[in-house]
Length: 469
Image 1 (cartoon, rainbow, N blue to C red):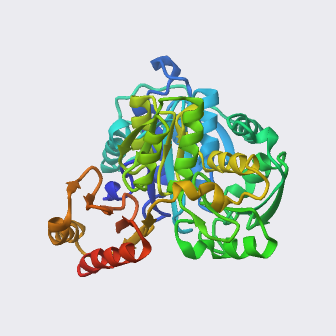
Image 2: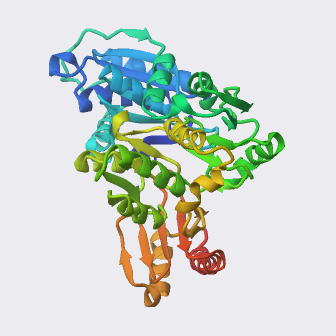
Image 3: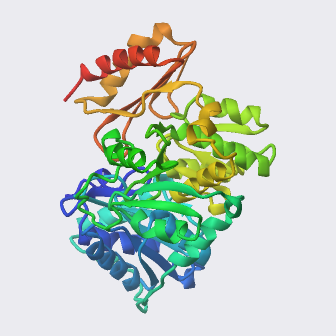
């Protein structure tokens, strides 16, 4: 029996192909989506589902199986083909249908997955459909069949049509960013990591006055140059070197499905995603005074400080796109940022778009006085020193977390468990949380200076890794 909980997770489907996620399961998930999300027009659904995929070799077979499950259940499939995840969200928002994006994001080549959304790019997470989808699949697998339950009425099969929305997507993104029409010429290096930014970056950035140096634009889900995971510093080395080599103003790196963006400055130094969150928050608060801005719990403490200083209302939330999007809907927030490089926009159906965040940074830099560097632009937002996310494989995650809590409790001013364990001191905080997609504990530390951060980081890691597998 499959361990579905290892594949159908808190906010997406993800697993090794074909050992955990294969055509049989994709087919079942397609059928389950029709039932759980109520997609049939006869049941007040929209009668269609949009499907897109990234460049992973397993994508076409999984999409075919999923689409077959959807159409067998009487719902049409609109296949938008190769796309970024935010391209799928655009299609869902523009066309008003549910969507399924086949991607494993930043995971290695052997993985694939599915990110699901309801019409209007509304996220589907464990509490909003994924748990029921898992139950549907488990029941079908237990019966030894990949069909709907026996008492289900026969329905006329749906159809499959192909639509190309890349051009519309690019135009729409540019329309959302004030000041793009007045930017000065900039030199930008873009590392697509052989992921979907190799398709989307030319369409989005092409009309702008940019000298773009392209890196690894060839779509290749085996990732021959480096993994498309820019949160790992090793995967930014090529970008940093190229920025210095060509004397670029800015470097951009995207993950495999191009929904996350990381940036480096003119000196090749990593730009903190928290600083970029603060920059965009200030821009959005200028357009929407007094608005709410979301930040997740591993974002720098500078972000809520800056939101308040600019008249906004900061709201802290868990890590993960479905949680942030739900909180944005509840609060009416105009923007949300995660330290992991995800950026969410109210005017993009509250969905995340790395490319849209990149456009905001380009607009800010391109309209700054001549001679202003990215480092200059972001200096006001860099108030603390962060460790970045550090992963550790442990034999018993809860035991390791409990040990950390016991060790540091005497030094803390507050402790919370919104998502994992967050411990806060007089001038520092750290968070330890389990990964939702991999068997890891993740650590983020922030302190007032580099030396203090490193000392605290190493102390916490020592406790965690005393429980290594």
